[in-house]
Image (tube, rainbow, N blue to C red; front, top):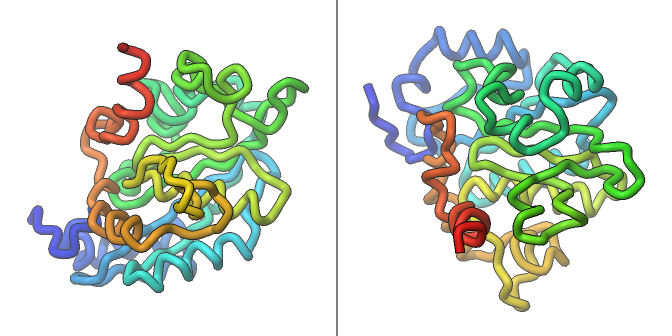
Length: 244
């Protein structure tokens, strides 16, 4: 019952389950194309706060890119929009409040049936203060001296990520792909890497990064609620710097 023949984080038993499929169809409707045993699947469960959006072009670009690499990506827009003031009042505008705190948005708003099979992408308006307009706050980034006083455009914690809505189509696509691929990949300071994990001149990944992404899809599965502890990228890039 725990076999995962394609190492994508979705158990074979769930891929064979008619009840599970009906549950996802009940949430996402015709967007959900089903799952298949032996086929690497990546479900992108996108949640929108207020009037935010991800453009059809960005969705199509990311799904096409991932599928050409042998991974059956499905972009699934969650049907319910979240009230921005209610989200701000209850969870705030920090990475902790949105992604990983005990009473975070992820903890309280994401259905249990989806937490271990999909990558959740939360799209927020960002803060409205002039100094950090369009961004969210991370105390980790602030402690390391990164971003404008700790404010960033997006942040990923493995199978969950948050991005502040972007207006520029290229910037939007690069940011969203970057945070999605943080499921597996770390930043790359190689100047020859022009993809989104490197210089971000292209909305793409390097060949070896695609291989690593494919081999790391089982990071979708979240059994702890705090999968940051099991992600070397976040340890190397964030926590180790704070502890030094």
